Amino acid sequence: MRVVDAFRQTYGGEPAGVWHAPGRVNLIGEHTDYNDGFVLPFAVPWGVTAAVRPREDDTVRLRSLQASAEPQVLEQIDQAEGWARYAAGVFWVMRQEGLPIRGADIVIDGDVPQGAGLSSSAALEVAVAVALDDLYGLGRPKIELARIAQKAENDFVGMPCGIMDQAASVLSKQGHALFLDCRSLASRAVPLDLAAHGLQLLIINTGVHHELADGQYARRRQDCENAAKHLGVASLRDVTDLAGALQKLTGDERKRTQHVVTENHRVEALIGLLRAGAVPEIGALLIASHLSLRDQFEVSCPELDVAVEAAVKGGARGARMTGGGFGGSAIALVAEEKADRVREEVLRAYDERGWAAPTIFLAPAAAGARRLA
Ligand code: GAF
Image (cartoon, rainbow, N blue to C red):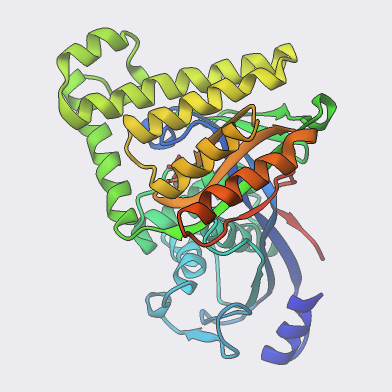
């Protein structure tokens, strides 16, 4: 394994073990996680692999094969810079919570496609969290490791994300999507056998990341919290009378509420269709989700809209942006025999606008985080 060779070169000796944590795509349930709502992501076959050896002191050495040949040497966790903050944050949270974690030597190797918005950062946090849990025999429940990873991103990196990406990385099962209730944190593996229905899920990586995206994410979250406060509910999850709620709200808060409440219903509807075996019918829900994210939640961008429109024009059963928005990837549900036409239509639409070609690839539902060696 490349990561083991690099470990030997960097630190000498052998790692105590090797762990892998995947990235994710989200089938449906977007911007619902931090509203205590429902999500339905699944793990992708790409992610982060970490070779780790514990140390007798509290120093953490971190090297990424995608960064530089030299490790960052952290005598204080706060010294971590750039990508390393996602990994260091997990040490920071675990120590803050009184878990008996010393230092470690770590080499990271990642293969999540660049700029695809497939949660390479959550994969990095989770790879470190499962490794430390294993090495120190902490025995934390998997969802608890996801919470620790999310806290690292919220409080150490400073990105106010929900728990979806970390939960998907830890809990996913091959061939299944993960239904997660982000309030109770109860989860269930939902079989996702698209091939049995002659279907495929394509990822269309726009390769773009619009500036201000991170600030916009925090603003959307704030809009939702403000709307919940105006409505006198703990979170938008608790809105049962949408029409009544919309009458009490104006502007952005009204739009965000419309999205979150209807998106939660779309997650439940999609699961109902899967359970009924009406898999091709989920396409309509993907399109509805996209329109709501575009018009009500306002987190799409021209590149995502064009990818979705062109995929549908090319014959996709449905398509939508996936993840936080403002770039990254869209997904498209296509009948196998239409996959080539869909790809051509998307590539043509980008070419006509003079945009760089997106990369388009299959998204099989992969397994969650695990020890490799
Ligand atoms: C990003 C966040 F990290 C997730 O928590 C989630 O809110 C998602 O955007 C939107 O659904 O991936």
